[in-house]
Length: 289
Length: 93
Image 1: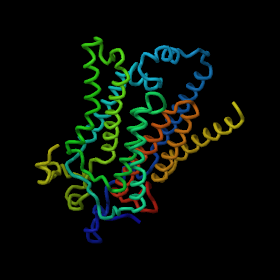
Image 2: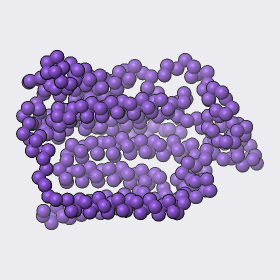
Image 3: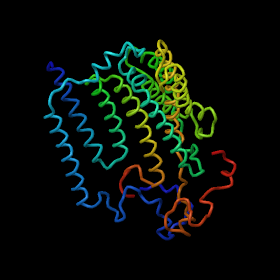
Image 4: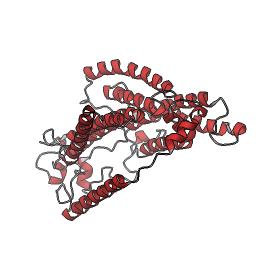
């Protein structure tokens, strides 16, 4: 039994191309699911062989005292925090963290850039669930408080910006699922500002310490802890906003149009071979993107 | 290591492997998504066992929370677009 919301306009008995919805992307052209047998055998052999090699290397590696934990422990008191994970992430290897935040931002922009100009707005069949709403009302304030605590606790115990940001992102996803967050949000200024703020503040701090210490991201004496805490606070919000944006602001591909299918059975959902403007409507002209 | 640790660790290893195999071979994509979330949570426990609580927090929130939600979202949109029926999701329509 297939869901034929896209073909309910088509009269019965039309050519089979009209009754075909979008081609199932999980099937090969011949309708099979698994692909050629020789390819599957080759993949199985490669993966198993690779796993066997890794296992052998791990089992026969000579026992050696790990060097890094000793190094970190020696310099921990200079880092400004007492949690070695945070010390490594935000002080010893802060440049890597900076690049990671940059990667998050770029990923979000990449997802935005796939937008074809249409939005999958809330449909009628997306009924709001009272249980989900109640859960969101209970969990989200708790998650907010816990995220603030985790950001602060990262300096001396388990926690940190990524953990708190991920928790906030989970709360944001719950909000979106319960219907409190409505797309589209990408064009909204505060969203963009909050998402970019993490990178800007981190780079700003990194460049701003140069007049004092002469190196990028080298915190001055005694300033390590407040700088780390400040950067972590901003990073938490930024990470949460980026992750929620990745979930909420999904670029939409329009539903298959039976009329377009009749004229152009190649299956291009945007009818780009027919419409030179690539499926954009007048509504999308003024959209700031 | 005490026998309780051995029991817990072996149970987690079996659970991880079983979940991974099942979610990779199942035909039902919804089941695969749900198993992926369960896998993420079990992996978070495993991170705690190897002494990486920060990783465990991140894994629980991201692997189970955000990525799981993303997969469910993708499944819902894909199912609506391709027209999978309720009884036969992920298989040929």
